[in-house]
Length: 210
Image (cartoon, rainbow, N blue to C red; front, top):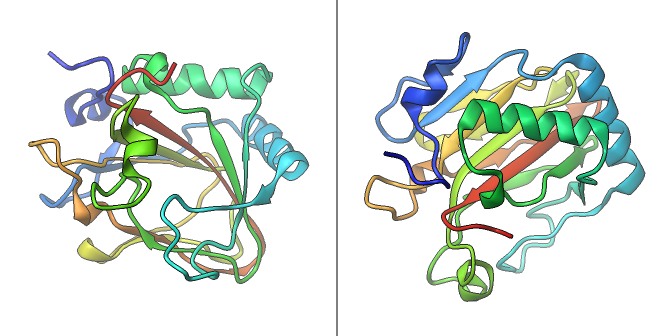
């Protein structure tokens, strides 16, 4: 029996069209046409309206490590409500375990260098970010538009790059079976070469966020 903060490969692959990336190093899946174009376009408009420079949890001294823009999406917006409902239906994760939905915008040349979504226990901000809600369990990301060139999500451990496609969902389990962080989930939001990339990211926690 899954805990309220968990999804599973079995549940996710029961959804028509869901594909698991063939590797035993991590649980990584993708689903095309998860979001309808009109919802994607509404979310893009929200990101453009509220975007601000992105930050990172543990500052590593590299000012070019994450150069995108980000925003917290308003939970009472119709497009955000539809997105949250679709994610809950797909994942089976209790919404109380979810962080607020974030939107990100990448202009030409912007990127997020190779990183993991889980918080490293040796990091200076681990206690601040994990003391209440625990570690991040699953990541769900949706590409909101097609990108002219670049902007893929690169999992270097398995030499796999996922190309942006409007409405495509990408999701992965951030941990190993023993609950520790899975370093094979390290991924790189690669530089946009032409155009602009918009995505949303939804992180879930081991314990309730609210």
